[in-house]
Image 1 (tube, rainbow, N blue to C red):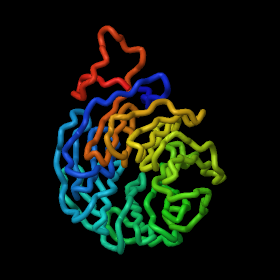
Image 2: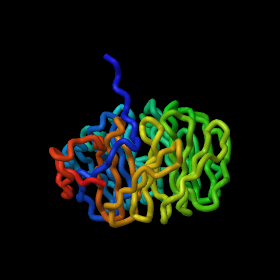
Image 3: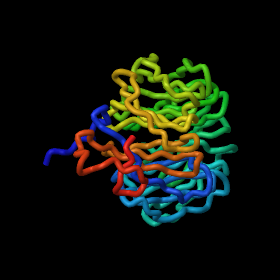
Length: 330
């Protein structure tokens, strides 16, 4: 059987909001989708993590244990482990299947802002307001190394698909590239004029994208470290970014309450999604490229799906409700 490639998130599609999830009682800071596309995890300022069935939008369970805001969640490629980062200065590991907490990783002396798991599932990276990045062995929870070099809060980390590169973004206005698993610093990119809020590496490993407090998304060639075409269009700070599986589209969430989809070959905005009533703190894309999930300070999570523009208008009218199965055309 020929494997099915992820569909391109191109201008030949229309996005619609098919579900609004309202289980959290405070801001939604983080969202993650499992590799099989079945489970959604969300982290909130209500100190909890919610697990959802992505197909139905139904809540599976609520994970409690953190004593402060949960601002980061990530799921291992094998779908077994969920890692969360919190303002209680800890990282917690959870069994995604059972929802049981497996361990608490203690070491950071300030807020944990972000977490990332290597593709092979051996390594966990966490970054903190204590200006460090910690590398942990995911299986044992033991600390491997502490990466120092940033001079302000470290607020974003990402690991490439090869598992040999870690990227970090900081309020010191720099991005650093680190070798994995050695933790040796490779390069510092200092072309930003404001806080770096979020970073992402394209699935093909060629491009780094960063979002800043100045509202500009920057693209960097990972081989040369040189700045590519900046993406300008948001009117607020960039809070979250995610690449499509084919590396051709970038999704960005902003303090201006909107989500934008960008064609990376042209630098043009494909569409702007405007259904959130607060800052969009988190965006993520399903592995098949068909579903986009966003989390916001309006306490909601929205699930967006891509429709072919060639759908039969007569048989598929553009409903404006948010009920699953009906369509809110954007």
